[in-house]
Length: 146
Image (tube, rainbow, N blue to C red):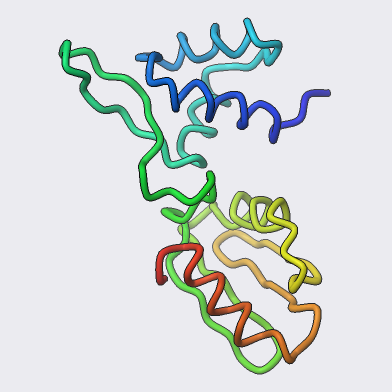
């Protein structure tokens, strides 16, 4: 079974090159690199990575990563980050918490013991309550101040 992380890494490289103008073309280019996938998966990955279509000088639109998107983290899905003395809550757009939780887990932050994702909320458990405030600050920074 193919790793979604490996597929997204290959997709990031394709987007950085700025040559793909359609999702079908991205599917083909990924298949050439050993990542067979569907258009609907590409669509979800593009949203997760924060990609968008921009016009080139020749007038054709191509997919590219937003310059402010931090390393593929889906910050546009996060609405707010809040905490108390023992836990951090990351509020997301409806239906996006699992994607955000998955990406938080993939970051393998040493201060994170684990995450639990619902529909629009991710519970982030710090490894130590002493790290809660700093971890919440770092997560806010990661998502652009939410």
